Image 1 (cartoon, helix red, strand yellow):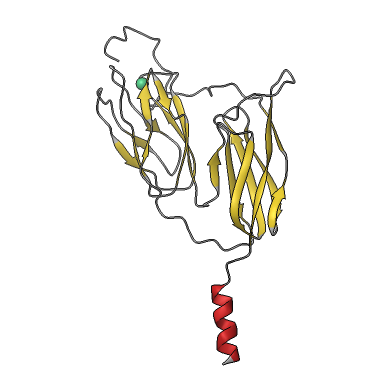
Image 2 (cartoon, helix red, strand yellow):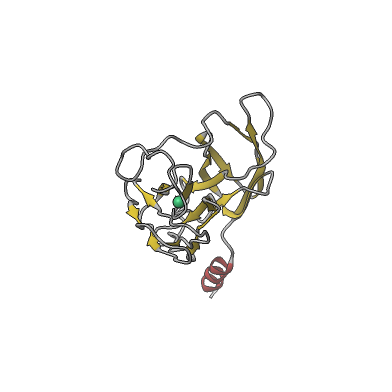
Amino acid sequence: MIRAFAWGLFLAAPLAAGGLEGPVLLHEKNGGLRASLEDCVALLEPVDVALPPAGPSRPLSIRTLGKQFSPRVSIATPGTEVSFPNLDHILHNVFSVTQGNRFDTGHYKPGDSPKVKVANPGLVKLYCNVHHQMNAFLWVVTTPFAQVLGGRTGLRFERVPEGTYRLRLWHPECGERAWVVKVGAGITQGRWDLDLSLPPVEAHKNKFGRDYAPPADERNY
Ligand SMILES: [Cu+2]
């Protein structure tokens, strides 16, 4: 009887959970600090904690508007459907040559919204084969603790089971840095610094692996 009671108590007790929070500082090459964490991604991945695998997240939408992708940085899980509504009055294309998540929507018209499913974890780089300057990034992750930090001054993860994690911070202008962090009961505090050193837009080829043609008459593109 006592045993059954104790077992019941065990089942009813929530998993010990804590949190992780603190400022993220983006250091400019001139020594200043970037005012915004726009496009910065924080991932907290378990090292010695068993978390249930994440299923496909809700369908995502990445618009093309003003010859730009919006949002520029998104987070999905394997199997997530991503649509690309074209809100411009010109043709666009979206392609990825990232291994494990290759696709090519072909040209699509204003008002069209091609869909793809991302299959594998990792950073997927998205480009338009028509417009060289268009670029976006899609993080496909299996951890439930993943955030784009735009509009914030730092990261905050709540209801994190206690244990050891790898904290990965990424920004298009610095790539990735990682730290091992221990999350205990309550909120664990930290502070994380990234150095912005890469060009804002990475050099890349078109979907055929060749240089983009110089801009021509763009009335239809
Ligand atoms: Cu385009």
